[in-house]
Every structure is written in C-alpha cells, then in structure tokens.
Length: 221
Image 1 (cartoon, rainbow, N blue to C red):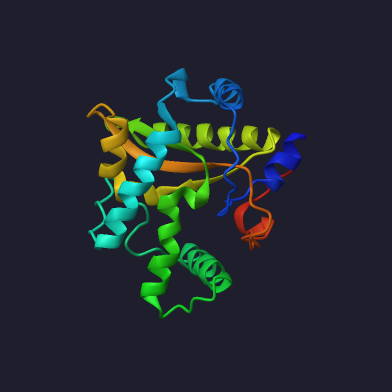
Image 2 (cartoon, rainbow, N blue to C red; image 1 turned 120 degrees about the vertical axis):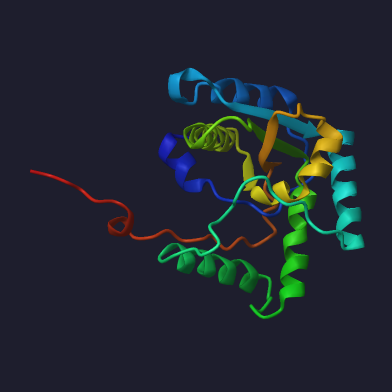
C-alpha cells in the first residue's frame, strides 16, 4: 500500500471484528511512528496500548457507568469552542446528521443519539485500544506534535491492513481509563483510539471533505 492509498483509505471505522491484532504488528507500527515530527524532537506523546483483560475491564467499567447514568467526567481541555463559528459549525453539524442519520436517529432524539455514542466506550468492538496522553505542562505546539504522531500511527495501521477510530470521547471517561492504566499525575488524556480489523458487514458512511479551494490558497507568481 502506497502513501496515497493509506491516506485516502483511512477513515474512522466504527465496527470491528474480534480478530486479535498481533503484538509484533503493533510494535512494528509504533516503532515506525516514533519517527513522526515534533518540535526540537521532544516527542511529547505518551501512548498506552491496551488489550485482553485490561481492555475488557475498562469496557465493563465504562458500560456500568453508562448503565447507571453517571455524569461524564469533565474533559481537561476544551474539545470545541463554545461558539463554533462558520464554516466549522456547519461541517460539524453535517457530520452529526450523516453519522446519526445512518443509524436512523433524528436530530431531535437526544437520548437515542447518546445511546448511539455509547458504542465509543466499547471501542466499537475493537480488541485493541491506544490511549494518548500528553504532559499537562506542554502547550499548543506540542498538542500539534501529538496529532502528527497519531496520524502517523493511523496511516501505518492501514499499511498493515488494519483500521482505527480516534476518539476524544474517552476524555469523558478519563477517570475510568486512569483506574486501569494508572498514568502519572502529570499526564492528561488527550484521546483514545480503537484499533483492529474492520467488520465489513457494517455499512460505513464516509464523511466527505471540503473542496480544495475552501481550505487551500495557492500564492503564485
């Protein structure tokens, strides 16, 4: 698989089989992803890869909280500005319409949308999860570095025939994640990522992208 194919075939898959991902494949991917760029090579990401019993325990704990109607943990960073301006607001709304429309859930059915979102905390059935932490003393440039690392991981997973789904949703269950992973206090959970083999029996509606002229300006002689 060449780089262009890896980029264009990567998408947030929300349905995985229970086929296990070999440890050696994960090690190969993460060893190569370590070459992702970062300012002054400080490599600010800290990844935890969770499988087997620990992941099952984490999913179970999250499921219990959902069933009990527990209030979500307040994320330690702002995921979206309170007033998301145009065109970002429209793009986010279009994603929600497509995502929940594919599940047959209308916009006004908030409870059903919450049930649909609950699959996040089962990792959409994936047998492997990655949790990306960052030191809470670091700034926006280092968060950008972490994003480049995660994108590199996802593209390398495609090269291995795997799919993934990055999930900021796990920040809402950060305390449950910490109970299993016991990260140092100085680390903040950025996101989780479900990893595995796609369940091709599930129809995944792919989110479109803005036209090139909306996001790119060529400045030429």
